[in-house]
Length: 317
Image (cartoon, rainbow, N blue to C red; front, top):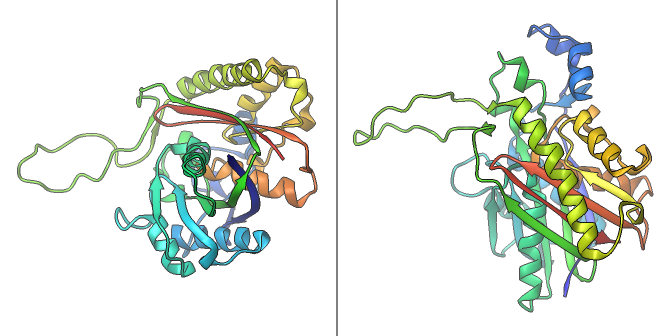
């Protein structure tokens, strides 16, 4: 037994920041950002916390699924970090929702949603039959150096969530890691222990854009071909490709390599930027609302992230 997704939801801050607004703060322009990334605007927190976003997305997903907090048997939050190092974001959300169930975070960076789905699959394979709430929430604006135009223009704040129930929607899953943190990382808090020497390095997100681009394009294509080979299918057999929304050029590269039309590669990064693990569940929620996902449709999901983590899955709706 695997799972099926019975409800989805998303939440964003009230504040939208356009490329034109960023050009007043940085040596950049709308043309520079759009040409290189496809991003036109992103949501940035002002007073909202990660817990606020996570709980907001969760409540919408639960409403669509027709369940209450008492019906949830596990909460999994995929995040780079909540409002606290501890307690976990999942525990904070459980408290806000009034849920009393096992609650934990996992960090696979932008691949977090797929890792969470895999975690949930193991829950169901173990004989459990309850509802699992998966929440992917990030406040990336607080992790950026807002003097560095090569990183801060790329990311946004948002949350996406889904409720899982037992089912047979999952047809394929593969996760892995290329254990090289160099292209993309953020150092942990330093502390002031008298027993360890001071550590150098940036307090903000560091990224080698070219290295990430090369890794992403190569990995996403390989993941697709691995999945199709395992299932005895082809790219043409997929109805939609839900790919981590990091950069439009990456999506276009993979689409052309697989020989698929633009309509099978939906994009929302123009409005959200890169929201890490939240990007695929938000895209999923929007497509469901638009009626683009109907019973029987095959979805290929794939992502990559710091680690470098990567993975893919195939769902049949």
